[in-house]
Length: 180
Ligand SMILES: Nc1ncnc2c1ncn2[C@@H]1O[C@H](COP(=O)(O)OP(=O)(O)O)[C@@H](O)[C@H]1O
Ligand SMILES: O=C(O)C1=C[C@@H](OP(=O)(O)O)[C@@H](O)[C@H](O)C1
Ligand SMILES: [Mg+2]
Image (cartoon, rainbow, N blue to C red):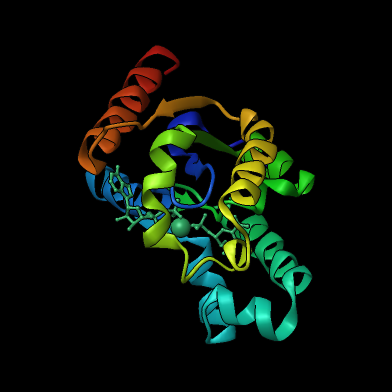
């Protein structure tokens, strides 16, 4: 497969659950006039049920297998904005595919700010079920190293969705000019 030109590569958003990948990805896609793909939504469409129910009915391994299949397919498309689920980068194969074929932004939110969002997430995120705050903090800390594989980090503390999206679009336009 020929390497896709930088400007045509799809943009991938990674980071811990709840940092805003889905919301900010939609805003970035709109600003760039690109299609938006949310991997969780694609999996949900396949199973006709949300991730929480897929985890409960079929188990996490089945979810991860479909996550890998769908990301492998989507990452080779041109000109998309793609938001991954927060656990996708646990799979080395997914890291490798995305690093080679896409431009990856890591949405970085500190624990201090993240913990204020817990109420928005607790009901819908299966990996948070049955965990206390210490265990969730442990998961947050354990997962940070996997997101270090990226092309650009965006610190999102105290940033509105639109501000983060503008920052991403601005940095992309700069890179496209510099490396044209
Ligand atoms: N920059 C932000 N500031 C405040 N709330 C946000 C921000 N980004 C996302 N949110 C909220 O946090 C929750 C999780 O966002 P979501 O986009 O689903 O995250 P992810 O896809 O990373 O799990 C949503 O309720 C969303 O409205
Ligand atoms: O971190 C995880 O393991 C997961 C994150 C979720 O996506 P978001 O990061 O968009 O919440 C979703 O893929 C699933 O619930 C598993
Ligand atoms: Mg999401």
